[in-house]
Length: 488
Ligand SMILES: [Zn+2]
Image (tube, rainbow, N blue to C red; front, side):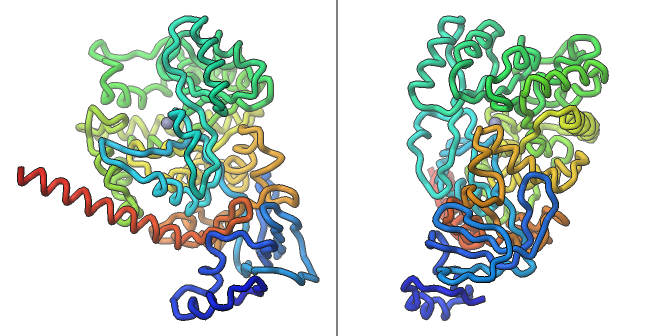
């Protein structure tokens, strides 16, 4: 496909003709041209409406200017041929961790951001951020910064902490393991601010009823992460029946018995909780992908993209260890996996019920833990939402429009619509028929061609080659380090 190009890049074209890639890749990758046309593609808007096409998508600068059939397309700077391709909004990752190291091994944050981009993710809610991330820059710099709420032990301290974080310029706050009175005080202080809230409730004094009591002023701006706090508020006997030997601080215990939690819920209590969540406009970000290893550890350990893209820092962190959070696979048994498979059935059914009752469901990844690699986590999440029995169009809506709503940006991102930011992916194939074509490796993978962010077009496989280089360099350094240690 030869683009119509009028910005002086004919020299580049000549040079590019010598390489294997089509010429427009080298001229367009990483660029924003004044007018970019995606011609003749199927368009999935992102709000649950069916695919329609062929349509042309005209991008002017950073925005979508027009979606439809255009007869006169004079004055176009570059064209992407959309024949046989699908255009979708970029994905919103509601639970990301931009990591700089794992298990003591340094990581280039570019490795993470390029993976996100290559997998169609441009907006990330970074939960548990250090404040230093407010200064992070890079190609996918659209991080929503939600630092941990660590420190406060009293309501007074809680209020002061909220004011400090707000003054520092954060987008929201992630809560984990806080006392009820501390949570209430923080929530009261947040009430008249634009701050978002992400709650990882854990097995604690609080549960999701505390989130419901402290509802957001703007609908859906507060989320519950994973599932925590929801089954806990719906237990048949009020508490989970842990064995006498159980130790919450031991992660093998903690994750083994987390796999036995959902079966102890009471369906009527659960429905009441889910309906109250929907009424209070508390969104649910289940990150179903993150505990996949618990129900099938060998699948998790042998993911096809690990071969070329798994950073050695992550590889080290994933090894069974009581030090590395989530690396609890010591004597993980058939029984554990079967309990977890059952757990997933309850969990998925609850996510569906919540949506049916009017709740808002989003997609997140939580990569950097438990055999989950950045970028592919949200793609796996799409498959799991489908497994939970959501229709693929509904799944795409969770990952696009719903994420935008939960971030308060639904007038800007998450839709293929004129006036919205040009945040789109171009896929050579139909992801609604098979989400696996979005993966960077594997049997049906590699069809995600372009991720466009703010009108800047990124060629996915070019980004993946960059990641491959970063990873192979880091692996070499790790080998050198361990050889030096052996000699010592
Ligand atoms: Zn997390």
